[in-house]
Image (cartoon, rainbow, N blue to C red):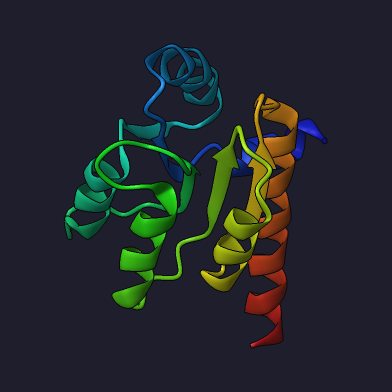
Length: 139
């Protein structure tokens, strides 16, 4: 990945949702160095509340799947009901096919297994951004 690609992503407002506090702090610190705007939530319900707040505008979601109060999949399902198409990466420690299929049905952009690799996350976001640029040109 080129430095230019990373520079082009710095102004995205990313919502990062993770219930494991150690991972949230560690990976969140890495994300804060890349993105000028990062908002962190600890579960799917908190994430959904942030997403539904009209004052917030998020460009990308990175969310764990298994969390208390509301899973990442259920959060995305509720978000999609509003017509929102915010790109989302779902992360999981489990490789269950059912999760993958549900994520695919919800239009999740990428499904990544833990342990998280920042390079893989950034490449997924970059791939999505390139796709958006192509769509803009095609219109």
